[in-house]
Structures are given as C-alpha cells and as structure tokens.
Length: 209
Ligand code: TMP
Image 1 (cartoon, protein in one colour):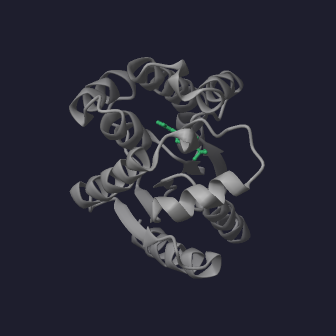
Image 2 (tube, protein in one colour):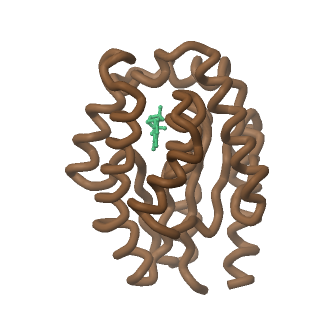
Image 3 (cartoon, helix red, strand yellow):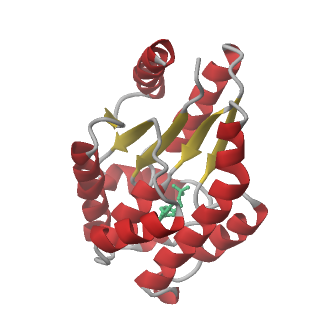
C-alpha cells in the first residue's frame, strides 16, 4: 500500500477528533504506520500559535492576522511533521488542514477564498490530501456539543450562529468543487456508523493504490 494523507474537516463539534482516533486505531490494527495530528498545532511552536488563536476574545485578531497565523502554524507543521512522515512512508491523519482556512477565514471572515488560494500557493504549494472527510452537522447541534465540553479553546465557538452557518455552507461548497478528494459525511449519525463509512472509503483507497 502507498501511504495516504487523510484530512478531516467540519464545523465545531462535528466529531472530527473522535473519527480521527477511530481511524488511527483501525490503521494501527492493520499494522500500517500512521500518525495523527491536528491544525492549528502539531509542533511545539504551532501549538503555541494554536493557543493564541483558539483562546480569548473573538476580537483579539483581525481576520487577516488570524489567517496569517493559521498559515504560519501550517507551514511549521507541514515542514516539520507532515512531509517527513509522508516521505518516510507513514499515513498521516490530520484534524483540519487548509480547507478550514478557506471556510473560516476565507468565507466566514470574508477575506475571500481567492486570497487564501494565493497564500496557499505561496506558503504550502501544491500539496493536497488524498482524501478529505467533511463532517457535516447543523451548527446548532455542533456548537452545543462543543460548548458542553469543558475547554478553554472556545474563541471560535463564541462567534454567532450566522458565522457558523457560513462555515457549514463553505465546507459543502468546497466539497462540491473538489469531488476527487472530498467526501461529505452526515455527522448526525452515530460514531460507529460514521467510522464504518470512513473505513469503507479508506479500504477502497488502500486497495486502489
Ligand atoms: P478544532 O477545535 O477543530 O481543533 O480547531 C480549532 C479552531 O480553529 C476551530 O474553531 C476552527 C479554527 N480554525 C480556523 O479558523 N482556521 C484554520 O485554518 C484552522 C486549521 C482552524
């Protein structure tokens, strides 16, 4: 099998982290070397940026600074973790990647996807995930789930429901434009049902590669 770069996307409280863990266990059980990681974050310095981005008041960053910090953390993560892992033959499962910047900063913060595409080209180049699972959930349900968890990282959850509705639509639009790699999953299903859907896709990719 050739190794895979797998990303998970979706609104806050869509259950990505649970699915990342279940998929990691599945690939570990098949003895495929796999790392799981996340954005923003994934390296010590990118985790510092994560803390700056995900805690505190919503107004603490202007949208463009927020976007640039997301790209800075992604650059660190790509160079230090993702590329070395892929080059050494490991699978990489990443909880969020650049689609999140397109949806949150490009669309919900109105910076424009075109601007984010330009930054992508400059900063991370042509790298694309082999497959992206977009976990789709009604933001009202997702936000409740997310805010019910005791956590300081709730800066983005503090934006209003319109912001989160825009994010949902943006992810669906991104998935529509990138049918070659994006699979929309109904995140209102139960954990095991979602995991089964994901495993079916991964099994097919493993056999195809
Ligand atoms: P998480 O809680 O899903 O791990 O992500 C942290 C928050 O960061 C989440 O609310 C979405 C936000 N985010 C962006 O706004 N842009 C990005 O590029 C990334 C990766 C995350």
